[in-house]
Length: 159
Length: 274
Image (tube, rainbow over the protein chains, first blue to last red):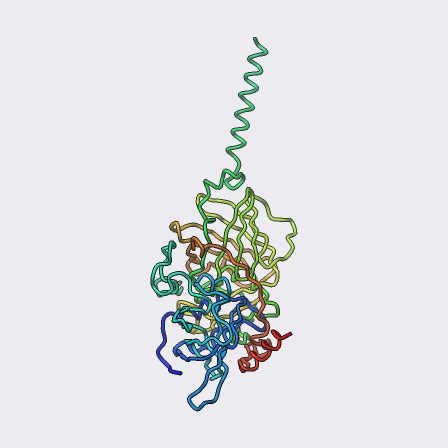
């Protein structure tokens, strides 16, 4: 596992996490628990890929350097938004090896806000949490011509 | 001959009356009007704005100020509740999943993907004498040029954002712990003005009328911006709340209890095995 710096994308994901969900007693919450200034990356084995609303969840078993194991839960976006970002319910199954990048939960629980998953075949699924709107990486979306959503100049100005 | 003249004059008058009546029909009354309406309908619309507002200078009522004085900041979204209860208008339209517009004469419908709700806007009509409360309100719309003006009343238990906590909510995206949520009054009314800023940009400018909260109409910070998705991404998706097992929300503490994911996984796998 390693830590690296924050990204603008993760900032966007905070918003989109909130935005793409809707609010069950048990499934939706503010992104406040996540430390968006940090990012964790780890390799592990998929235990469960829960394709669901308001959030999808990826559970991964990670083996630490000392040989012990821990289970991490990564919160992703709604199914529709993930699908628009190229994700699929069949992308992962138990036993698959993956590398996950996420914003960790502040209190140290093994929970993260899903940012990226690299599959065993090298394919990368980006920006899972809430799924980025088109152009979230700064590039115009195919056919939409939208600016990068959430970019400072596209955000509402304080009144 | 006189009879022929009379019949001709009658026919001409009838035709003129018909034409006059047809001309008087407001936009949105006929199928053929679809070609005259601004294209809200191709693809879908992805919100690009924060779903909560930056601090406002709209003056609050004494009652609202008293409410704020005793407001306990929350950590989680206050409309969290069993079965993914909708926040209702206006927040529901601003969440991350897109909006999809549909038209038929006399009605525009908006599918709100993030809660699988559909909002029905009656065109060129009148409000009911006694609208039953709903989370999206009873909406009446009409076109003023290229702008769709929607007037909504009759709200159920939707939440309003009274304001932002001191020194909070000034960033480009405002998070729930930064704001003050509160109840609305009995005569809550919302007026939206929707228009295309360009072929792929939709603006929704909202004004809220609630004299139990504000002493003046509340105008939301710069109109909400939506960007159009086309093609595959413009297709609406089903949305069903079906992850009640993953996190537990404590309404007393106003926050989500972060369980050990190993325990959640165990629960999910046990469920799968049944």
